Image (cartoon, rainbow, N blue to C red):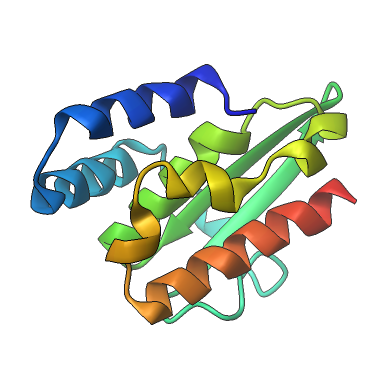
Length: 133
């Protein structure tokens, strides 16, 4: 149950054979994310369990889920951008229906992220799913 924005990423990844190119794409996605207001980078929005500094500010607006995110690491900011494409704009009732692990596996991330990055990604997904409940 991926959104169209995430499906575009899946299609783009299929055309990129080299993992360095895929990493570059993820990093560029992170650079293209709108800046998160510094005032939102507080302990309540900080995601624990990440090797890098990570903040996710989530808000339900009009019954839909929206979030902003930021990190001090470019690749992690790119992972936030992937999650943004997967979750942002979904109806609140549909958040729990997203199997992020399966969707992200379609990109082959499982085999190419370090264990620290994988743990951080899991922590971000867990934070989003907690918001869903």
